[in-house]
Image 1 (cartoon, one colour):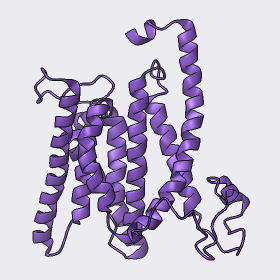
Image 2 (tube, rainbow, N blue to C red):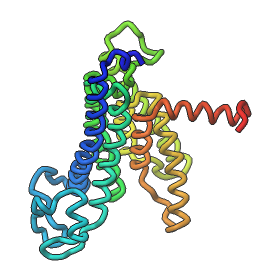
Image 3 (spheres, rainbow, N blue to C red):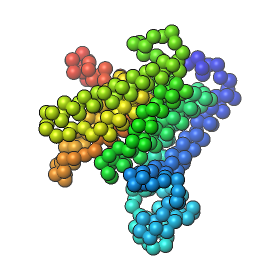
Image 4 (cartoon, helix red, strand yellow):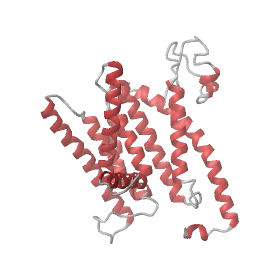
Length: 309
């Protein structure tokens, strides 16, 4: 790694310390934003402001005091109840805060805490964008679970914002090596290339899932794919590119099918929203595309009998 060899011992020590402190910060910051994700998931479907008024008890509507709004800790200390009316507060609030904290921690570990990355401004910017995407995808997933729709204020906004964001931080789409796909002309500025790949990803993501929905509707005689899923995968494609959007769809379909079968066996209900599985696939592809590619190559060789296990 040439970038590591170029660093002095004090710089390496500073990078290691910064990475360790950053991991703690990433979890705490993620948990705090998880609290805001809960607010968005609750208020956005009702077309309410996500900024004000302050959070309130769902039972007595009393504003939650700042001391009672510390992520996770307040819920535990209050034993999941309102300080005033003693009404129960769903554990989902704390679970979402923990989950968002873990996602933030994981993305920071992958993008920033690696050797030589803690002193790279591009790595930090990429983490910020991925963090915002993760929070928005989690909020959209919760809304889809609760109300069976994906909000345009997240999906359409993300579709329009994707080319501009990846042009500003191309590491998000092209990776830290800034690899431009072979099908793109190489003699152009990296920001422009990233924006063009992002636009193709939006078109591919939305187009493929829309086509599958049309075919499925004709085959099964009913709507097979909501248009919210079309816009959601279009948004995702803007950040993972056209090839990444296809991988996201395959992963989401596989995991969703397994979850759907399990839900049918346990509850008898066949319906399951697709948005959370698209979000899960998007997060995996955004952060682990090389690992997924290696796994696919190994699996293909195993299927063909080219490798003994």
